[in-house]
Image (tube, rainbow, N blue to C red; front, side, top):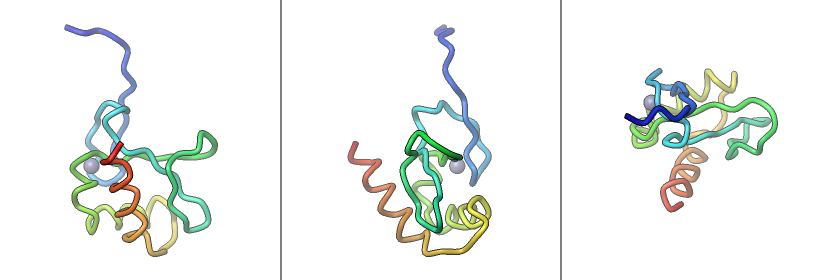
Length: 84
Ligand SMILES: [Zn+2]
């Protein structure tokens, strides 16, 4: 068993806990969705929720405390993330 200390994070959409490095880390800045810049608040989405944008976008409204066109933005973030 690997006992390395791996950070565990919670998905904002489904609340499932996963290893940080398997999740998409984002932040929200003035209604713009961004990959985490290293500063400020961030949040995580798991792989499954990245496949279900329509569901996850509702959690983004809650997380960012506003409603912007996050659906399109999230799609783009996921596309970039997947090609990494
Ligand atoms: Zn999830």
